[in-house]
Length: 232
Image 1 (cartoon, one colour):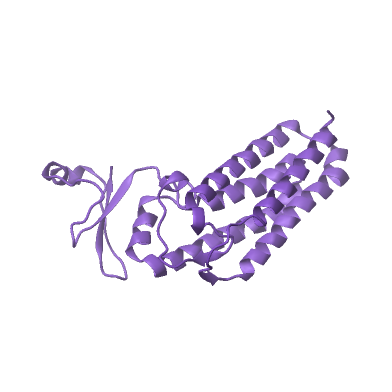
Image 2 (cartoon, rainbow, N blue to C red; image 1 turned 45 degrees about the vertical axis):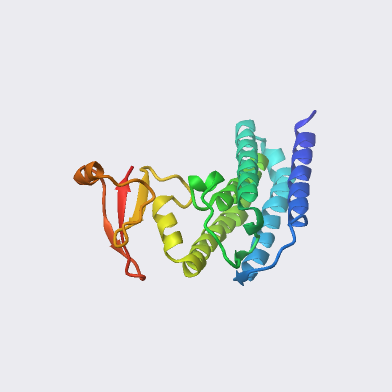
C-alpha cells in the first residue's frame, strides 16, 4: 500500500471518527453553559487543522518529500490522544460535554485519567491537533491552525476552572492543588482543611512530628479556609 493511500485512509478515519462522536452524544438535561461561542471557534479551528493538513500534504509536503519519522510520531500522538479522550469520556459519563458546562449537582471526578491530571480531555485534544499536521508534515498548518487551537484550549481550561470553583468551591480548589492541569505533579500533594481537621489521609502524631521535613505551605482562599500542602 502506497504512502498517499495510507494517508488518505488515515484522514478518512480522522474525519469519520469526529463526526460520529459529535452526533452520538447521550441525551441529558443541559446545565449552565459558558462562552458557547468557544465551541464554534474550536470547530472552525479543527476543520482548519484537518483540511489545512490535507491541502498542505498534497500541495507542498508531497513535493518537498515526506519525513516518515515525523509522520510516525504524528500517528502515535494522534492515537494516544484518541485513547486518552475516550478514557476521559467514559470516566466523565453524563458530565461529558463539548461545551463549558456546569450541570446540576456537578461533582468533581477523580477517577480514570483525572486521578493524575485535571484536564485529561483537553490534553487529549491537544495531542490530536498536533498529531494530525505532523502526520501530514504540514508545518504551516501546525503554526497557523494547530497553535491557535491550542491557545483556545488553554483559555477554555482556565474559564472552566473558574466556573467549577464557583459551582463547587473548596472541592475544586483542593483538586487544583493536588493535581497538575495537563501534566502530573512532580510531587504528591494532599490537602486538608486545617480549620476542621478534615483530611483525605490519616494524619497521625508521628506524621505531625515529621512535618518539618516535608513540604508544607499555608494558604488562604476567598472562603477563608486554611489548607496545608504536604508531600506524600
